[in-house]
Image 1 (cartoon, rainbow over the protein chains, first blue to last red):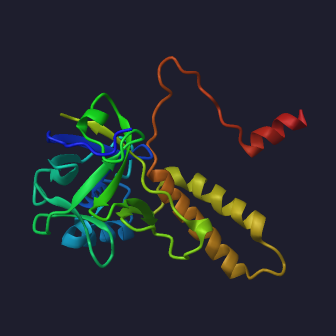
Image 2: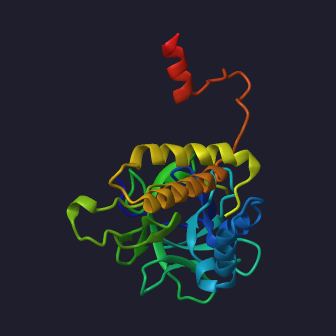
Length: 186
Length: 76
């Protein structure tokens, strides 16, 4: 089993979780506003979110399986990656990072570089060669601490954190890290 | 919230079933009605988030059995 590999190639990819594409919250909120049967509450929530840089920059899941996935660019640094967005607009080139106070996964053009490792069944620190053959299950971990990324849903909106969102501390409610499907674009 | 004309039957169905299950002489009527309305509203919103498509070509139409249909069949 390969545990460490030197990655050399930059690549772009889409991520999915539970059949839904990983997107920027800004994309999701813009889509919500296009709904002709939107309620006043949903409209106000979307408008507040779009006006707020912090809320817009959150990484989330699309509202529907058919929605366009976010293009993520994986740039190698030894055996880990920095991940940035290929997304026209104010978040183009923004890097994924974990917000220190909340442990939420966000995108920012100004935050310090955060590194992530990709793990597959066969490789704890996978590289492009492990996943380019076709869609593959992967886990994401923040580096250098190796903390896995967990999905967390609150009021119907998904977010990602690098700590277990189980606040009870009880083992019975322990969550599993996110198992994404990655599809390499190029 | 606004419920559109093609959603009223669905709203009534959810609210009616909730009241049927939860109403009783010892229950607070206002609370039951309010809860039924909230359930119906939320289900209408949840339903709107689902895409509605025709049956794919080559696939057979699978009709869902409703309680009324089942009762009518059993009565024959």
